[in-house]
Structures are given as structure tokens and as C-alpha cells.
Length: 141
Image (cartoon, one colour):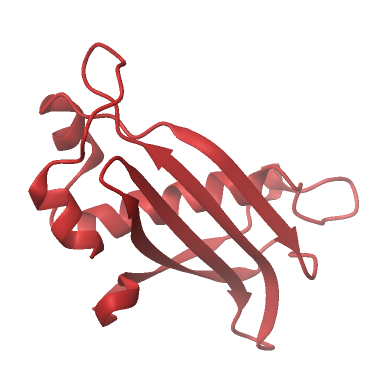
């Protein structure tokens, strides 16, 4: 249900699909704003998996990528049972920082629901900043 594609110098993109669940909405059936960050996380882990890695494997290798910055610009509400597409693009900011950009759309009417980004720092098993391993940097260059 997801697809990925290399996009050259701008980074690798991946498309994930999510459906707005009832528990993710308020009394009016509108998706609660914090769920967009959850959908970013789902899409980010899908991006990693499509690139041939899993977050579990990164952690097993002593690398974590905690979020150090998050931004979401809400364009239009998503509602209960909407199918949404999350396009995620990753890029290298520095030898120790990664950025993921997100675009959430509702394909049924071509609405852009939200645009966002997260920035992640590479840290080792002791929680200290470190350089990203070559195999991760190569995915993002």
C-alpha cells in the first residue's frame, strides 16, 4: 500500500497511506492536531523501511535519531475515515543531522491537509551526539 522512489539530490521520497480512525478525531469528527505528528512518525519509519533499514536495526547498531525540532502547518482539516497520503522526503542537513519533510494530502479531492518537517540528531547508545554512519548518510545525499 506504500511506494517509494529515489528523487536524486533532493533525497529519497516515500509515500505512505493512513486512514483517520475514530479515536483520532474530536467530537466534530475532525482529526485532532497532534495526530499529524503521529502520522509523520508512521511515514518516517515507512521511509526508513523502504530504504532498506528499520529503526529497530538502527537502535540495535547503537544509533538513535531523536526529534529535536518539529513543525506542522495545517492547511485543511482531515475527517474521520478519510484516507490520507503522506509523502515523506529525507535529506541530510549535516554529518549528524537529518531532516524529513512531509506533505499530507487527501487524494479523494486533491486537498493538501498539512505540510511539516522534523529534524533529528544522531546520538549513540550513551545519548551523545555522533556522526551518522556512512550507510545512513548515503541514503540521504
